[in-house]
Length: 194
Image (cartoon, rainbow, N blue to C red; front, side, top):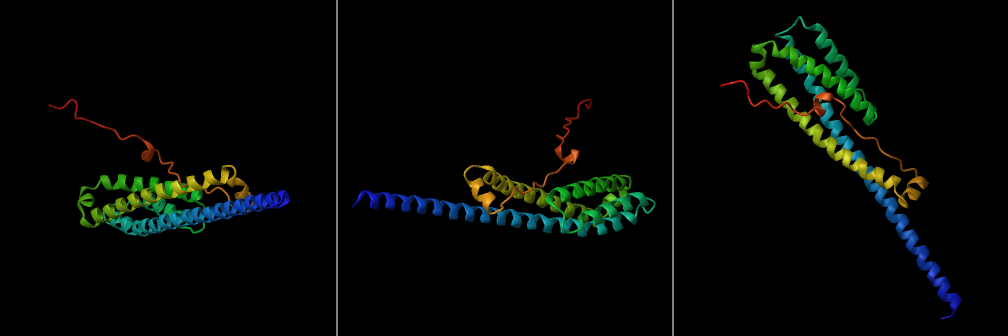
């Protein structure tokens, strides 16, 4: 084999290796982008479930505390804002945080009414809302893990070359900013009691 043929063969092998790497990297970006989108859709399903529970919760509390109109309006307004389609994960997180704060005020009102807290309907709605919140939290963890993986690949060399060529961009995290969620739980061992 002549030296020119060896050089040509080496060039072809190197180009073939680069092509295989580029296709593999591109397909990896597509897979990660689709995982991020799928994870967001799962969060969206749970957010819709949450939004659908809230009117029933409001009506149940209204039956016991009809004079708390400001709280009901705040929850309704926050729910309407959070239910608007087309928000980015960051915008949705901010809207959901507002809704969570409004719901906190609603539950504070409910605390003042022992008959309401004992109501089977209220307890069932509260339990369903708690379960939905747990599913949202699990979905958020799954979504953010996929976002982290995609963002790392978009920013890392040499895959960032393919990302730039085919316009793969960083995804946005879905983060909770509610201080109650981030705060450490208070522990009381009943000190002062005998």
